[in-house]
Amino acid sequence: MKRRHTVTIARRLLDWEGTGCGGPGSYLRWIARRYLAWNRSLLLDPWLRYSAAIRIIHTIFKGSQPSILDVGSGNAGAAYFLRSQVVGIDCQFSGEELSRLRAPLHPVKASAASLPFRDKSFDVVVSMDLLEHLPTSIRSSAIGEIIRVTRCLVILGFPFGPRTQKFDELALKVESRRGIPPDWREEHVSRGIPGDEIHREILDRASRRNATEISWFPHEGLTGLRLRWKLQFLVPRSSRVYGLINYPLYRIHSRGRPRVAYRRVYVIRVANS
Image (cartoon, rainbow, N blue to C red; front, side, top):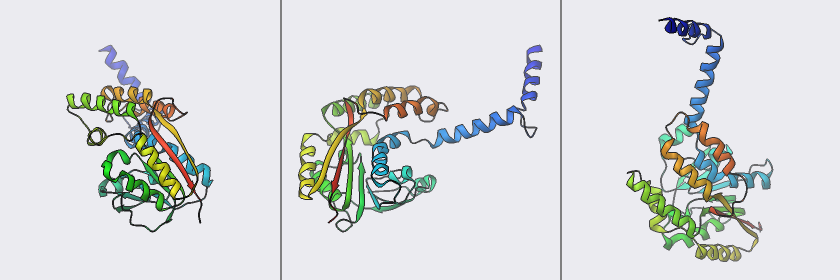
């Protein structure tokens, strides 16, 4: 009885029930509401996927507004993180999700292997984590189209190499046993993670377009990815502490150039002539 009385007094002092207009309780409730809204809005995996491309665009164009095409954008692509107008190509879009995200995205339904644009239509063409979802028979055509429609810059990233293939195969087995295999993981495994053959194809297509500079780098370390993948079973996306635990990890894992990476990112600069 005494303990209950003490708790009641404490709650009144803090204004926890919301009967007053101020007090520490009101401030704490405001913080809690803001945190929960932020936690629900987090898109950490897409953010990490696009993080390198966003940095490159900001570095090269330094505050100007280049025209951008995002091939394989989905509902939350480069437009969402740049907060500037982007044309997005995908096979399907969710109108409800687009409205919720309020990204300045102009969605166009089309195939990456046959882009409905003229040569050199965009200053920048970005494509992150698309190639592994395409049948191997059209990957070469998609690469050619992505390079064809750029005026200045291509940023092309995708899961790469045998270690990534092995990780996805293992992850799919575990997720299948748990009854939660995502469609995208099944496509990774069934269609195969790009490897050296795609590397050679990119160099060849870029050379045909007279690229002035071609570089590539590893992105998203496999060690960090494994940690976050295991953590999702303990702290799912719906958890109220999801952001509190995962946000610092994603920030850390977005930095540096890992020795063993899940993804490879190509940067191709072409002469605008």
